[in-house]
Image 1 (cartoon, rainbow, N blue to C red):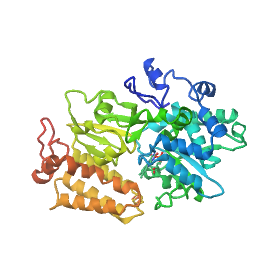
Image 2 (cartoon, rainbow, N blue to C red):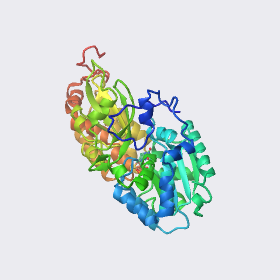
Image 3 (cartoon, helix red, strand yellow):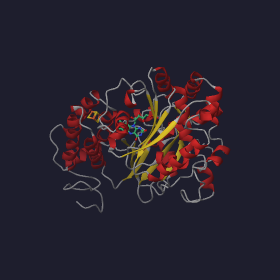
Image 4 (cartoon, rainbow, N blue to C red):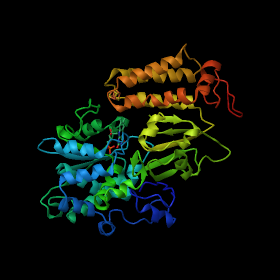
Length: 457
Ligand SMILES: Cc1cc2nc3c(=O)[nH]c(=O)nc-3n(C[C@H](O)[C@H](O)[C@H](O)COP(=O)(O)O)c2cc1C
Ligand code: SF4
């Protein structure tokens, strides 16, 4: 099992995704140690598993399932926050001989393992949510696309699928309804871009992965050219609760611009790195506090929110709500669900430059503004860090970023400009120190001078 440090959260916060976590934390158990077998179907059914699927199959039409989802206002947890019910409606309406549901458990950000932890600890919730989706869009096949190296999650999933098939919750004749719902676990190996949904679908098909122009969206032309729902495991795991408990169970948590909870991984300069289930809309500062904050004598300098293509936000961003619109307005995004806490020892220009180079290296190369533009952007960052900026470097950086965003084919291109743009927006003094005075205040960039005591120059 992934050695994840589950962080304690305030008592009033719900555990919609990891319901066993509160008991585990209360018992003071080490992550995973002594936890109940997550693939124990009898125990899961006693706790309510498959009640949602039973209700969806026996008591609801496909239209009623989609309507319940629409009332819950559930938005996708894969990063973009798209309304889930709209995808289901479009997929259900698309005419084809076959529909698919894909559980997107690839988790592209190599430093984040929230979805893996969810699958290891609550596999039936994800499978049940996917099965309800299959009922709503008339799909008979679910594919769980997962990183091949997530061996513990794959083992738990396979055991859970076998148990659910044996009990008639999945397989040939689901709950005696005559409906078939088969689940295939598809381990995949690839790079960052495999996280983009059209690349993921090609990966499942065994083809070379490059994003496709959308529309058509996967909901109408997806896996093997058929209508396909692609969802993050966190999106799917709350759907059984929405069906059984009414929309309230999900929408009771969260804020006006996003309901429910999300798994957030907090790392970097904090006393106790780990992951926590957080209601949408929680201020960033409260989330960082769950991990013990920045250890003294160090001080908070910035927060990297959203993974490698995330925004680098200043300390007063602690007030910003962790939800789709607020983060976007601040120049960040939820992305992979990661928050990296940065203290005064780091150089943010260097960090943004390294992240931009990572994004340029990961770009698949299909579109020229991304392939060449991100490379040139990374070079601007490198020149600034090496003390060799050209004239008007900041103007070049912002103009090029705007061109890249305007011509994007997939979201990678637009988001990859965020790290360097954050430095222009929030950390201008540090940028000016590098460009105008050949000084790296943190003492990281060589061969620059430094103004930080103790740093090597
Ligand atoms: C570069 C890139 C990487 C992505 N990585 C992931 C990922 O690891 N997991 C994920 O669920 N979605 C990822 N997405 C978003 C997916 O394309 C898609 O929007 C999402 O899986 C839809 O699921 P949802 O409706 O549950 O949000 C990524 C997108 C891009 C552009
Ligand atoms: S925008 Fe970049 S990552 Fe996306 S398809 Fe084009 S080259 Fe590939």
